[in-house]
Image (cartoon, rainbow, N blue to C red; front, top):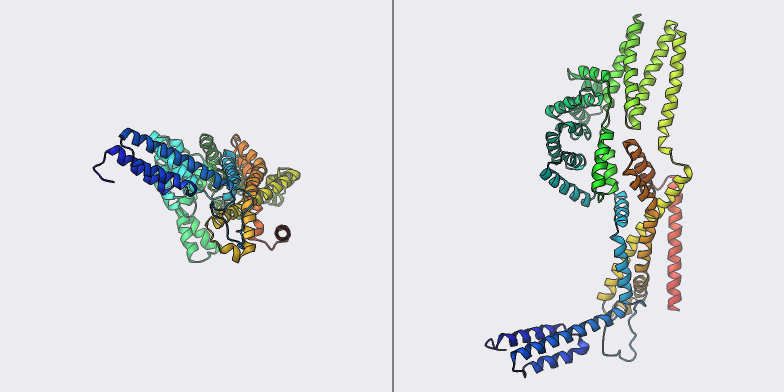
Length: 555
């Protein structure tokens, strides 16, 4: 075609030439005839009209070709030629491509439901120890960018508490506290031996300025000084008790800080504050996965048990020395300090661990008081101390078994649902792989492959026929089995107490989901061994059923 020809003719020729490259083989002659007739037309407008009609014919031919192709099973070819005599036709599935595509589309529609995304993300992260997913991390970064732009201090504080990158997190924490100094408690809410170096004197000062009468804040200030030194000691060798005490009490201000902590009128570990902040952001950003929310409570800082133990032991030794010297009043006063701090942790602690350790301190102090009263002949006070010990034991037993608040029947029902959730999820993954592999193997296979491996071809065809349906059924079973856990997570959004939320989501929810996987990691315990043995028997039964079905098909 000459470049000097009018533009409409050149456009028509180019359009039909492109259409001929993709024209279905069964009607290609029509397309070639259209293109040939184009040169006989003289008027430009008629040329364009002819080309447009040709393109419409190409569209109808392509749609008809696609529809015919979809009605065939996967791996089948549209061919106008018949097979030679004596040639065995290839092994093909029974269901059409259209049926398989419709089932997969319905499955995809189920997967995009919010309930499905929550169930899938929760189960997936139960396989990785409930670590924050990449989707959660991207959402956190978007939240941080938006909060910085809007100067939203509380959202910045939430992101700082949950970002795994502690360098980035401490920068966001500083910005949040600069916008709202009352948020200085976030400095004390996520500290461990790896990031105490970030808790500088300036940040500790902001924390103590915002909450000077809090024993927990004083304990964090103590930790910020000795933990780096104690960590360095641990890296060299296992320290003795004397070396540990020397590392902890080596700072001149340690004793003064501990006096302030033991005499503080309040004990607030900021656990509830952390939960209220998390709950606030979670309700505004429901796309966050449940493991991230539970993780914000899991990584919350613990009290400085080492300093508390060291200081309380020092007070108890001083009380024993005073008692031996005949100064019963001073001994009683020193023991009362330990008991008072234990009561403070028990009454105002927001986690069972804190309450339990507070009861341990009170038990230690009460036993010492009982011995002191018996030595001084004060039998009335000794009886009071004995009664107090019984109360402490009752409280301790209640806290130890607090995670068993759910009825045994409910726990067993949740365990069964958790097993079904994990089984459905694993089965769905296997079915998805079988579907993808089967479709690719059939659509891309060579003619000789099915003849050389007939049994493999039959297995692939069986997978393509039934795996998509089973995949849809598995996802529906997963959603149905996950409903109790979805209800637990939904109810946690309105729980005000952090401890109650932790018990609800962890012990009654996500813990059961991950606990079901224990046979994979520790298969040799008695329970896990028999559970693994049962799963192996079920897998063997399914294999025998599938094998028998294939042999029946061959017959």
